[in-house]
Image 1 (cartoon, rainbow, N blue to C red):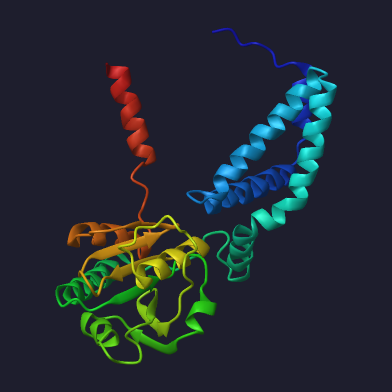
Image 2 (tube, one colour; image 1 turned 180 degrees about the horizontal axis):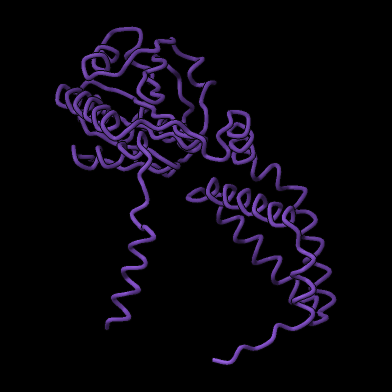
Amino acid sequence: MLDLPIPSQIHGLIRTVSFWDVVDILIVAVILYKVYEMLQDTRAITLVKGLIVLMIVTLVSSLLELHVISWLLQKTVTLLFVALPIVFQPELRRALERLGQGRFLGLDQYLDVEEANSLTNEIDKAVFNMADKKIGALLVIEKNVGINEIIDTGIKIEGLITTEFLMNVFIPNTPLHDGAAVIRGKRLVAAGCYLPLTENRSLSSELGTRHRAAIGLSEQCDAVIIIVSEETGVVSVAENGRIERYMTHDSLRQRIRPLFVKEKSSIKFKDIIANWRKKDDE
């Protein structure tokens, strides 16, 4: 293969790039990635895609000198930038909360594998014991977005989680029974908390107040909420404004375990090299 010379313009541009320019680009890249990660799997991501398409169409119409369409699109983009703080209010609030809590760059504290497995088993046992006895329950597992305003509506506890402890919290006809319990890490930080009801009118009539409260909170933050129906004993999980019903032991464990332990990436550099060698051998 011939060694082609680099054009002088590109060579001159590369020489002007300093170390701090590279650092600057990397910081911007990390921020953009974290913003995308925060918006991923939310309703806002579709709005972002729409804005990108609109900007591309505006650029194309400007290059093709379609003056009327270009003028209309430019005015529309201007109005959208004014409306963005209103449209993205929940996401902006979430970003500011993560930034204030030092979590924007993902500096969360995870449990080790053994602790995560033990905690997952304790929650699973408690949930399905309550389901068998048809004891209604709401368990909120906090993720990246802090929900201190929800915790403040209940009674502070700060107790280590065990199966028996969780079941005692939801004993019928007690002050804490009808509220939600909030889990942060390996501790139950509060119980008897009030959750906001969803305004989604398309939900099934089978879903009661607990389910609607769980969905309502999941629409406002990234928490995962476990619901035990008092009428049917069905176990459900709400996340990102959606609800999944009829959970089993295995499906519940698989759903909540990653919330407590950071999985290591299964793709390693040595695996990539090995794959390359296999392709070369073939």
